Amino acid sequence: MMKKSFAILATLFISLAACADQEYAVNYAQLPEDAQHFITSYFKVDDISYIKVEREGLFNEYTVYLKNASTIEFNHTGKLESIDCARTPIPEGIMLSTITDYLKQHFPNLFAVKYSIDTLHIEVELNNDLELIFDLNGKFIRIDD
Image (cartoon, rainbow, N blue to C red; front, side, top):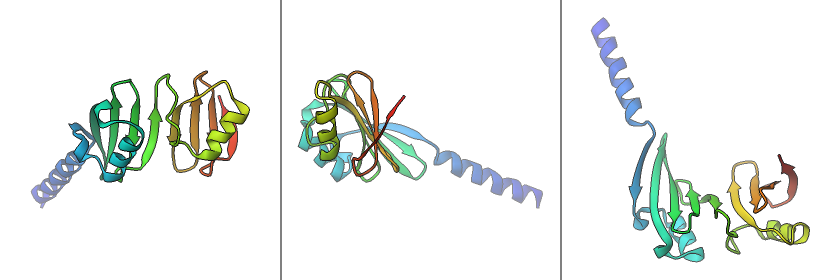
């Protein structure tokens, strides 16, 4: 009985270890279709340096590294989670228009370099390191410090 319990626990431990976080490289064709469409809408496939997949529990998350030092993160379905354009402006059309309009009105001499979407809000970082928080509809909430 004791040996059987130990065998069951050992099998469970090995199974859990197999599901642990894993990272590996993939090519463009292995990205989810929505992520591929995003890339071709705002960048060129030739702009890609490499693509990394990270297994988070049951799902994959994709990070696309561009030759210009930008990084784009997608969830397992290919939905945009974040884009970091280093010190260059985020391409027009990626951010919600309400956020773009807000930035033009309140920060006309600055531009967004990072854009992150989570389940509760959207965070935008400007090229002066100021971080702004918006709701998921693009309504300004606060400046984050």
